[in-house]
Image (cartoon, rainbow, N blue to C red; front, side, top):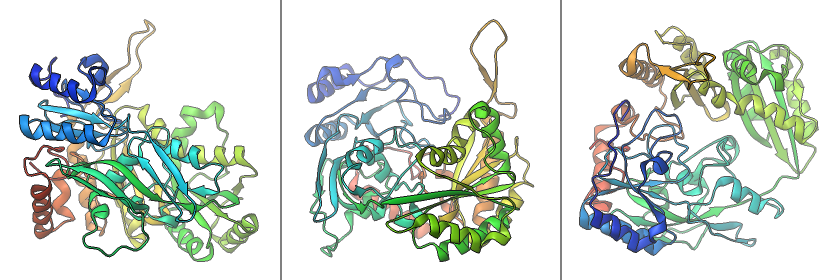
Length: 485
């Protein structure tokens, strides 16, 4: 994948491409490598494939027909939503493939106000769902920084988490029904959206988090929540990681309306300030370690948050920065959400999405600083649920700004990709030594396949393989992702 030279033309035969055009329409099969380039490279720039067609079906029947053709003609199908993943899970590992984009599956059903749910197509973007719910009195329990690009189907396929897991849980807890085409072309559809349904195996739960290896999700029934009437946000400064973990635990106990509990360190905040500095004045006097705390409810959440800040005041090293309205709330959140963009300005980063027991977070970060990394790690994430994002900037190529001649930026990787992969292994082994998980919300993709056995037993991996063989007997869906070939 990384560093491989892409061929100019897909190895799929002209007859297969023509058959795909017959299924979805000629305009919706794209073969020009220049046009498909954005589909064939993941968000990080680390994973890319050679030239493959991009197929954009508009219905369940068209998806099924594409999968049936793949089984007949022996090519691979890679489902893709917004392509915002970080582990290469939606980019082909073989040029004997097509990318099936869900971007034309865009229907949003009416809100079931009695059942508190909504049915949406897989290609609906998270921001579009949020907009559809905005004035309804209902909200969706998962929110991500990539909301403008990520799709509901992709979020289900990766069991996405985001900023509100501390209150509502991951995508798996939001899914009440699912429609999908399995790897053998079978359609499964269980869309009654019942809160309780004990009729056999949990297919929704199985397909959630399966990363497109068992089926292509086409439609989902989602649980909705009542929209809180009020929201209050504060940025708290603490002395170190241990204090952050301690304060987070106390806040979780005393804040019943806790909606988000995010974590940042000075290294990342200062990088954000250096990139966006003219727009972002210092948020608080002490930037050593920061907690972004948000509460939401129908009562006096401002008073509730103020009381909680007073409760933990002995652990704070500066006066909290408190949002006084939507604009100041957005300004506080920007310090957290711009981390990813700021890190990307340095080069192609090593990005690891891990989770740890709360008791191990401080020791993990301390030991992380002792590892022989090519650049200091930047750590931030969702402290409320133990999910940290570990980034080594420029690990897969550092950015060098061109001279005054206006030529393109260039990247190099002084230690080579092999050095970055050694770094990846060191960090993930450290995670597991502290009883954590190598993936908290972005999935395994192809990047973490070599490390899956660190956290899963041989019996579990064999069970995964048996499920894959049963639902995708010819191995047409997303080969190399989640499970080794």
